[in-house]
Amino acid sequence: MSEQKPDSGKNSEEKSRKIIGRRYRYTDDYQIVSALGPNGSREKRMFYTGRWIRPVNEAEEYETLIRWLRILTVAAVLAVFGAVGLHPAAMTHRWYLPVLTIGLFPLFYQGMGAVRLPTKRSYMERQRYEKSIVRVGHSAVAVLLLCCISALGCVIYWILASTTELEGSEPYSLRDGVFAVLLILAMLSERMSYRFFRKIQTDTYDNDAYHP
Image 1 (cartoon, helix red, strand yellow):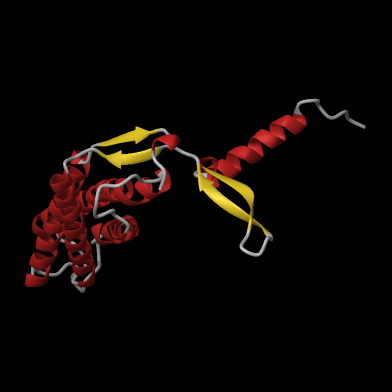
Image 2 (cartoon, helix red, strand yellow; image 1 turned 180 degrees about the vertical axis):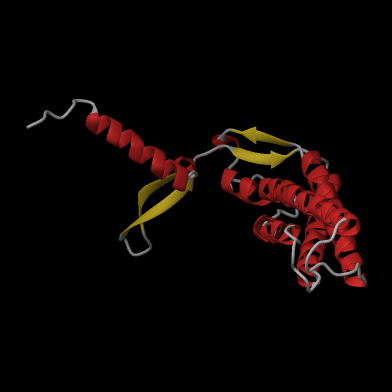
């Protein structure tokens, strides 16, 4: 019978904490304490104990940036969905279309973040900040990258279609032109979104510096 190593229990506990930490990354920002309820009963209450995050831009500038982030997110959503929906009927060799379709996933998260964007400057919990402002900025980069790859694939496809014989390829049509325009609009929107995201400056404060 093999002996169990003394530190095996400790290693197992540390591994469990890492797994829980990845899944519940904001757990350490909160504390649950017991308190008396309205009828004298005991109940659990959760308090935020992490650091506060607050934008330091001027109020007018901040509100303008948030407004533009929402407008540009809507523009990107419409452009990408429009491009995916208006893609040419012939899919042969158009491998750049699935690449653009993958962009719908980060675009969905960007939309979620745009909905949660604080309109006014305020103290935010770390979770609120990262799932709104940060999510919009990082998602915009991901969508922009996928749109660029899709655009590059589109250019390569038409170069090959015009110089070689591609089986199943069709002549360039108005539908292809609309697809290209929508793709460019999506890239411009996401590029501007990331630019405005970078303009939002924040500062962090100790938990006791602000009491909601």
